[in-house]
Length: 162
Image (tube, rainbow, N blue to C red):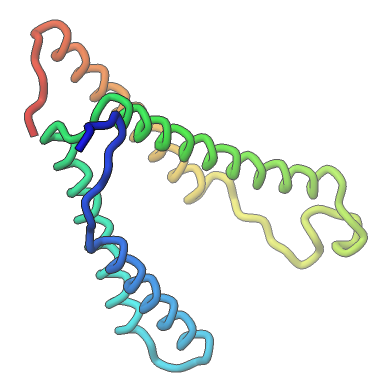
């Protein structure tokens, strides 16, 4: 068999277990919408989904560490992750654009005022400020950690062994 630049994956059980877990989770949500007790069903589906995703990710990492990924495959995985992050940023920007559009030009349905009457605003100095500070400091610490790893890798010719 001719070796290609692309990674041909072996059959895996994780897509099937993930699909079954999502189905169980959705069954639990349907039961909640029908006002029937479904707490255990939702927990079971969520736990199974987390385990399936974790072990699936572990398989991908093991394939990478055993050098089964060629450079083309590694570039494809990297590009896929970058495109996922870009799509999340665009989704986030679209929510803010919709929010600002409604704020600048409120419609007739909400009485030409923003926020609509009867809606109380959340204080920006409470939990919102705390969450923002937590997000910014965690990003700063993570950036410092990555920079320190890069300095160790290049200055001491040190690589991490998993």
